[in-house]
Amino acid sequence: MQGRYAAEYSAAQSDPNGYWGKQAGRVVWSKPYERVLDDSNPPFYRWYAGAETNTCYNALDRHVEAGHGERLALIYDSPVTNTIKRFSYAELRDSVAKLAGALRGLGVQKGDRVIIYMSMAPEAVMAMLACARIGAVHSVVFGGFAPRELATRIDDAKPVLIIASSCGLEPGRVVEYKPLLDQAIEIAAHKPKACLIHQRPMYIAPMIAGRDHDFAASLAAAQPAECVAVAATDPLYVLYTSGTTGIPKGVVRQNGGHMVALDWSMEHVYGVKPGEVFWAASDVGWVVGHSYIVYAPLIHGSTSLLYEGKPVGTPDAGAYWRVIEQHKVVALFTAPTAFRAIKKEDPKAELLKKYDLSQFRALFLAGERADPDTVHWAEDILGKPVIDHWWQTETGWPVSANFMGLELLPVKHGSATCAVPGYDVQVLDDDGHPVAKPGDIGNIAIKLPLPPGCLPTLWNNDEGFKKSYLARFPGYYNTGDAGFIDADGYIYIMSRTDDIINVAGHRLSTGGMEEVLASHPDVAECAVVGAADTLKGQVPLGFVVLKAGVTKPEEQILRELVALVREKIGPVAAFKQAVIVKRLPKTRSGKILRGTMQKIADAQEFRMPATIEDPVILTEIEAALKPVGYAKKA
Ligand code: COA
Ligand code: AMP
Image (cartoon, rainbow, N blue to C red; front, side, top):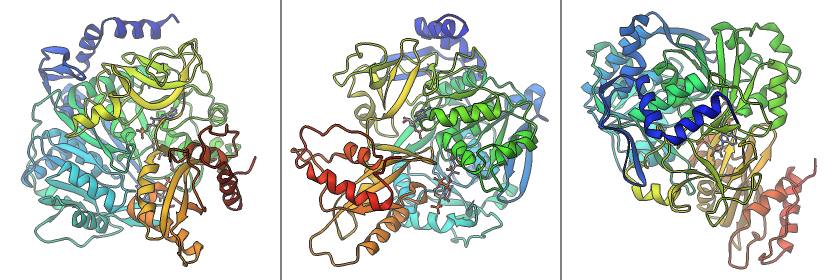
């Protein structure tokens, strides 16, 4: 390959210190770095060691100081509450400074953790930035998670304060967050000193005297706080993500490298300029929300759009087009599932004809595999580049992408395009050797060191970091994804190598769901797999073997299992279907053949596992699945 992309990639590859040293100029530092990459303690690498900075300063204050105080920083568009609000950089800075003062008043110090359990209102963005301002480490927990999941995160992060919304809004229902928060604190061993509650008018939550404080009143009474200098290598946030068991992993993001990487990506990947409107249609609870609703657009001086609604039903499948036109969005980032939802409701995109999208330049898709059908459909209706790019909570920014601001590489449908400069992506066989030739499927791994912005470790868990990501292939970060790279360097992400499934772009662990099913008193054994779904990409599908002597009607047990996963993990798990089987298929050594079960559910061809204990069980599995709509050829 030749051209601007190739030149940039090889510059980052041949001289990482020189390349990222130059990129550091994108950010204001209160103290310059001593070393670009500190590689003195492998496998723990640190970017911009010795430097000091503040992420909130770079996201807000510096733009105001540069004379852009009147520029729009944030547009809040909420069809579910029928609200549109706009915040200039100066307004957002002032609110964040006061909120930061309020946090201080509640005893939050530099380095303390603050959990944020909030719905998609501007106050959530302010809460994150206010933590960054005073050097506190935020940990946002997605609102669709149940109290037990929140409690696990409280016990791991040990926050001094939790900032929560009274409620969130899902189409047709108000989700009361505050009672979920109260339950979570009750379950957790660690108790925060205080809670700051943002009362939304749809549900005014009862407060616990002495512990709970009102967000609006605290903000009004507070004195603004200045930005404090933190080390480039100090944590900005911890974001928990599904791991290979039910226990979530606390992905750490450090201040310095994160800002540099995000700003680089705004320019080169998304091709967005300061002052232009960028929209990541995600949730602040996910990494996409952290990086591309909150930090990247603001660090870059662009305008970020915060959308509290869905692609369909709020009010119709033209919602995205309405938002793009009304706010002059130049680039949209969402999950393929959103486009599948729009396509299902409005296959000919009739609603699009009502809107003028002339200023719109590109659609970016990530979070799950972008199926070529959906990509073709989006390209046809929009007539603009549709870019599939691949990344993870752990990396915080794209590992592979196409480059609106650098060079638009030819599109290959089904591929998440090419490695982003800074990432040395390779395909390894199970013994850790590079696969024999381009196109061979294997484990996708990234040669260490990872570029700036990626996780340096897991929260309070260096050993877990090594075990989860580095142990399998020494010298590499194991992404947990499988796929191949073709002869032109295009990366194809095909599946996970662990138990993670992607449901509507949300990352979930089937192991976590199995733990919940196994806790039901009538269940002897169980397995959960990700079955293909035309809307959500994948949905969890449970298989349970009941204990001998259970007399309860099977229908009732199945209902209880669905309710139990919703109660323990949350509605976001979207666990709606389980089947009861006599036995689970296993290898002779006792390993459950989940992959084979998934193939049967999806009616795909599969090779009979050589070590299977009893092949007849597969016929039983198929028979159990057919009545509920699975295991049927299209
Ligand atoms: N708080 C509480 N509950 C929530 C929630 C939140 N923040 N977010 C989702 N839920 C609930 C939903 O209401 C739903 O509940 P239900 O079982 O009672 O219907 C459940 O969790 C599953 O949600 P979801 O998987 O989002 O399914 P959906 O049917 O509500 O919507 C889509 C499907 C495709 C429209 C939606 O997933 C979507 O817009 N996705 C694209 C954008 C995106 O989320 N990207 C994420 C990563 S980039
Ligand atoms: P998350 O950490 O929630 O962002 O989920 C990351 C996982 O989502 C990746 O490891 C992949 O399995 C999957 N994923 C993200 N983007 C893509 C993509 N463009 N194509 C295929 N899978 C993707």
